[in-house]
Amino acid sequence: MMDFESAYQRLLEDERTSKVELLTLRSAHPEGTSKEVKRSSPIHNTVDHVVLIKGRGVRGDRSYDGDRGPYVEDLAIMDIKALHAIRIVLSHMGDGPLPGDNLLCDYPLDALRPGDVLWIGDALVEISPKAHTACDRFAARFGKDAARWVNKNRDRNLRGVKAVVLQSGVVKVGSTISEISYE
Image 1 (tube, rainbow, N blue to C red):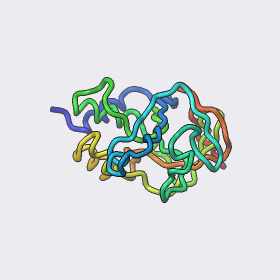
Image 2 (image 1 turned 90 degrees about the vertical axis):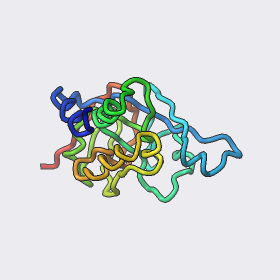
Image 3 (image 1 turned 120 degrees about the horizontal axis):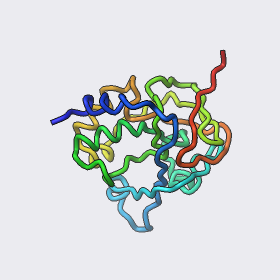
């Protein structure tokens, strides 16, 4: 049986596209839903484009309308190859569960550091210093072993990164991602 790291390394043999591969919106739960259900089973909808709004995040996402909790970050980004590695090991590469990230991309997130700035589609975002770690919801969807794998490799950003929107813009599936260099 293949482990997460072996699956990930095999997927890295293919060249990176530096594109957005999947976009999701996390829907608000209906009124009256218990806190336990809200924490364990958010509703994720895949979409073909999103609008990132400076200081607010992803229009239509539940955090956009005030359910931000203690976070100031506007969006979460995950490497789709890390998600595929998890799905390979769990043997459900198809329509398995989705993580709670807004953008899943084929981009080398391991090279990003806090303060790095990216163009994603028409939007400009800055990588946050806040670590993006696998929470209880991630472990419930993908298992404790997957959560341990991404958390023990924080320096590689396998769970992804958090970002703040600096300039509003549209991001579509297939949008190019490029880092801004200040040299």
